[in-house]
Image 1 (cartoon, rainbow, N blue to C red):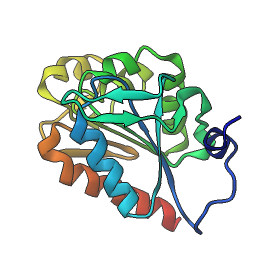
Image 2: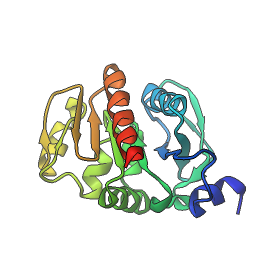
Image 3: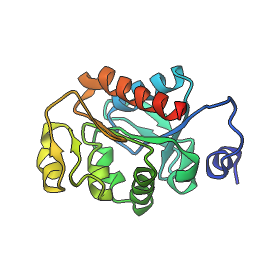
Length: 190
């Protein structure tokens, strides 16, 4: 097993005391800013970040920005992660078709780990069956999907319901990232 796969799957000692690990999901046609901005903010904050994809190695954002995966979805272990970020774009429509991704998101939610999604990203928590009765937001185009899944949709820059953090569009990225980092800081303090 390649070193990076082993690192995430087997949960070795952390490189820094109290370092948190977060996975960011990638697929073709991800919204470039919604993957890169949170990735950089998390890294800047000292969080260990792993980009996970279905196994093709390299992906292209909606605006052409390339992104390599560090590991495959199958190599991720919910017990080795403190959270997951689901960028928008058209990628979430593909991500929600992966039983591995849906099981991972559902398990992270059961554990109370961060489940953060933005724009079309909430399609994944919807398909994972974790939004009923919870407050969240999304891009307006999928509002009906979120509401029909039983969530209480709100047109706000960021909505936090326990461990579920959601935002609408790239313009909301500053608030989205602040809410994620606040959640992770509180988790690390426990």
